Length: 263
Image 1 (cartoon, rainbow, N blue to C red):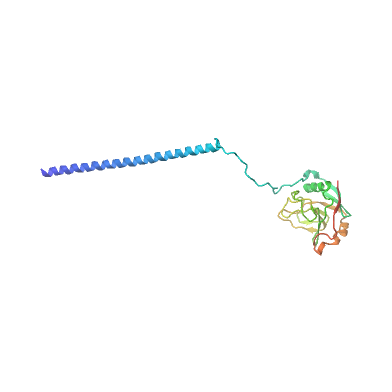
Image 2: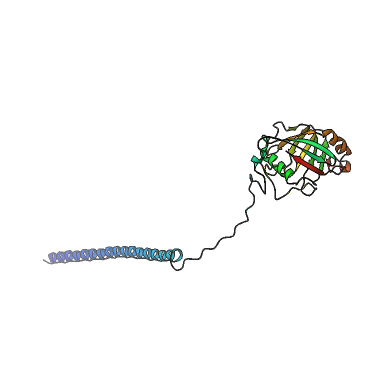
């Protein structure tokens, strides 16, 4: 009888322990679930608050009473871009795609000239303009080069030193010889190295076959030829030599463009 009672008590205690364990497990699971739900709700609430704040800020600074007054930002002063004419460069149509004839007088030496408006319209238009508006008269020929294979007289500098006019330049290069050879009597435009849009008022007269290698921009624009007076130029100016006895420099005989006509 005693044994039976002990067994019943043990069974009852076991049931009680199992019931307590199940109850604790249920409470713990409920707590975990509640904490997870509370965290999710809190996270969503935070996102809503952040979104509302951001939206209010955007509205305030873009469309509401706090819209800032627009102010211009500082920018660099634009300069002439590569491939762009500078100054009052005549339209290439001025050359009329025809041959122009005229005369340049250097000191007392008249040179007959012929300009090819079809082959080099932009450069010829510029040179015509310089003749017609009187720019060339009074300008000097500041550079004489008399080397083997390089024989030129360069004229038209804005100040007689070889300086170019910073307010006037144009391009592109036109009618440059493919073989880099500029025959005797050629008239061509001077320019800065490696810059096809640095043609200006300066030109050079070739008094002996001359080779000028092309640079990264190309060759030099041939505008026409000297048709008469080249022998007199050689005798009256070139033969006087170069200042300092060097092969490239100012001519010993000071040389000025005293007259210029074109038709």
